[in-house]
Amino acid sequence: MTDVKSTNQKRILAVYAHPDDECYCSGGTLAKYSAMGAETTVISATKGQAGQINDTRVATRNTLGTMREKELYQSCKQLNVHHVECWDYMDGALKDADWDQLVGDVVYAIRKYRPHIILTFGMDGAYGHPDHIAIGEATTEAFVLASQEEAYSEQDLPAYAPDTLYYAYFPSRQTLLLNQLANWLVTMKDRFHANLDFVHGLSLFAEESTMLHYANDFVDVRWYPPGFCIVEQGEIANDLYVILSGNVEVKQEDKNGNLTHIVDLTMGEFFGELGLVSAHHMRNAHVIAKDSVTCLKFSPGEPTKFAGRGENAVESSSYTSSSHDVNVGTATHVIDIEDYILHKIRAISQHRTQYPIHEDMFPRSMLVDLFGREYFIRVFPKYELATEL
Image (cartoon, rainbow, N blue to C red):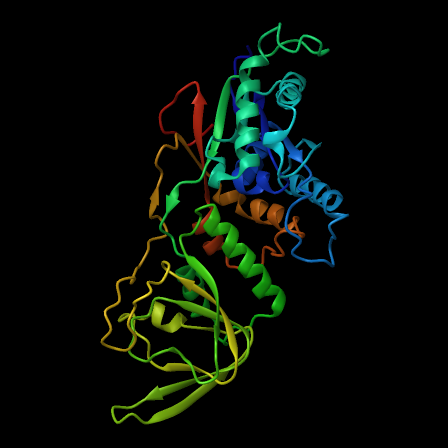
């Protein structure tokens, strides 16, 4: 077995299920170690052909697999990955694949690239995805078998034993995307007005961020009829809204119940950020639907069925989070990727069929708070908490 004495001698193999897994699981880590001289390889077992199509201008069902494979190569270019393979297993059906062949293919890759370090999914599949679980199990089995000469002896490569195996890990976090957005919005000189592309990207960004525990928001799309009071003056400020369609009017109420019109807001505009960042965390005006209004709503938790309204209502979901409020749990390695955060975001942005975002959508400080660390569990050999692989 090779004695790894320095970073520039390391070879890292990341084995995942779909194009885009490489970004969220270990994009910053791959970019960081590539910059330090390590030789990096990414393998996706599928072309992601059963994934969502979030923009039919980019791909259709018949072209999605081809497009996502191209996106994988473009993503890995942003991460400075040296070798990329995209296999042809069926997306959504890895657990039903010929298991001996799948494990054998990973064994062959290990013997071909001779990595010191292997990265893959853990047995939780990040959030229970069957494909993630399957590739994690297959890679774990291959990690052991690759060193055994009698295993897959028909392969034309010698047996090889990697040094270490890591599972990508997504610890529970209490960071709220709504607070990050609110703090950003109030720094702007002029009121921010998003276009449809931004709102679309934000909704997908929020979905992925919460699913992988980068953020802990409850994100929902809500419809309100004309005249509905979406926000009431005096309420505790917990939620952030962005208007997807329709128009609202902001009105302030005096002690006699008289309403004064403040401003009208329309599609692409946020409301609720001022209350979230204020010292008293209170709403200073009503926000009322002028016509049929649909909003993307960010909340600190799923609302209860019995929550009261108004200034004196008891509100149990009030929550303020710290950007460092992270339960590392069973992670053994925490990798600081702050200096490589834009590599990660640029890589994610290459996956246009899935995430129509780009690096300029959000401030760098917000991206660092959300994505500035990547977490791993060292499976073999066991190891204490560390900051380097």
